[in-house]
Image (tube, rainbow, N blue to C red; front, side, top):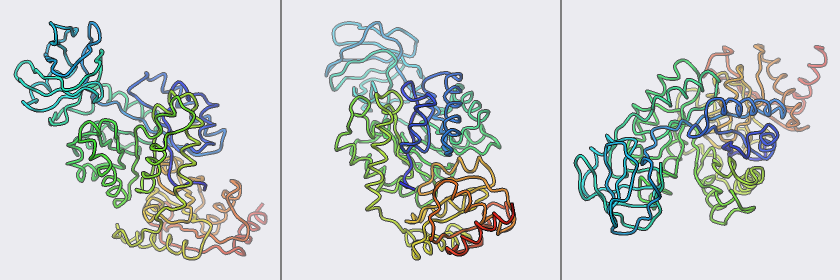
Length: 482
């Protein structure tokens, strides 16, 4: 395994062909993001089909994350863009209007969530155009008036943030419900839920996916989500540090410490965490990343993130393959100084966790070349990852869907499905599949883990050291059975 931290690449017009997706996989992409803030269902289905073709062509398991757009609050249409200056007054009305300039230094606009105007209080701030324009509220009521505090150009449909206001709206819209139903029907692996505020939002998402085994990722991008993080974690399968809106919702200088806090909590709980937004943004148009961006990716890796994400860089950038290759190189070099072996950092999650901890420590102590983990639900591989071993974890499962879900887990390389139930045949099949991938090193030692009863989630209870002689025996055993 060339790197342990995973890459999530957003697909878009620059990267959604089969040929380009194959290049991104070979460059190091482990997962692909479908951004449902743009495009219709037919567009995303075409992209999804291309992902699965590329996965088959490359013989590689990759994951698919559906990013649910959520209730993005925006201003309405404007007759023309407003060039706003410090001291200008902007009035927000509940009626749906086309915004216009009332007189010199006074403007009027509407919003797609007029009910939010009832929640705003005097002296709170409203941010426009993704945080680039700041306005302070001076009057509330049926209308809300605010005074602009910096210069900026405002155009139609730009985003609004209320960083001081608990907006308490349904974060899953009617459109989101239809999009989630599409994701269930087309069997995406992860659902990223936007603008999560509390546990209730994640419970609603869980109700919508029903019995489907897709994983729910809570996007942390609001100040109240940070305050309610522990309850959100309890009802989520993973987190995303969505630093774009988060950097508007909280003071900018708090973002790095919040990122570290979220990663630490996710690591402790044994759930994947994705660090997102503007990681290599300059590469949308430039061949090389800035030194600050390179350091940003490296620091996220050192923080312990499972996944780093690319947005515009891979979706609409001029050279998506180069972007993924650059991120892969940064990860690989950074992992040379990674703080592995976190056996003393966490309490055991359950009685079987003792086995996962022992496996990873044993593998590192004897310098094994790999851990062969046969997992029914994926939980044992996820628990091994939590301890951050130097030894790569090669995962085998009974179900393809479980295999796909492991693409977001640090240090775990999903290999293939295994249908055998007898121990020697399971070891044999795992070794053969590893050999077929070119990952089995001759004269090396591996550790294999399986569980009994076979197929029961969470039952991993057997550890076997596979010496070079035993590996040869199992490989020859295959020939005898032909």
